[in-house]
Image (tube, rainbow, N blue to C red; front, side, top):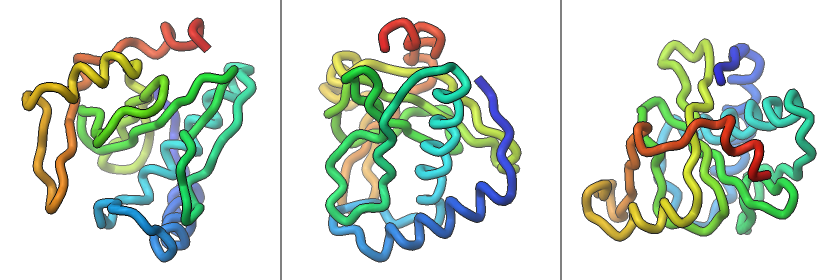
Amino acid sequence: MKMLITQEEINKAKSITNTFDSQKIYDKLSSENNWLGWLGEYKFSQLLTSKGITYEWNEFVKADYTKPDFIVNGKSLDVKTTYTDALWIQKSEWDYYILSIIERDLSSICFCGWLDNQTIEKCLKTDKYKVTRGNRYDYAIPYEKTRILNELWGLL
């Protein structure tokens, strides 16, 4: 599911992320692209609204952030936004993970697939997807391992 991105949305994402980065208290990888996370969440909120799905969005601009990005009918969802074709994750703690990929020219975002917590847990138990980044480990689970987004709507 592809959605267009406006320059206004990009500017807002960068501004909000600057506020968040100034107050964060955990090991978030420092990157000039951290704003992609908020933009992915914002666009996903638009997608949920367009589908008529009621949700709670827990925007990540809190110093003590401990909640999932979204809660839908008691299910927790985390949106993972990147330029690459992999779902990047450190640990599994929510019910569902959404892979969103932003075009390098910033023109659009694609909500490409999703994985449930059980599948993520299996992936984290193998070194196959493990990537060392600075002083931490991440896991890059390829797009091909995800399920199509239309399947998720029926589970929420």
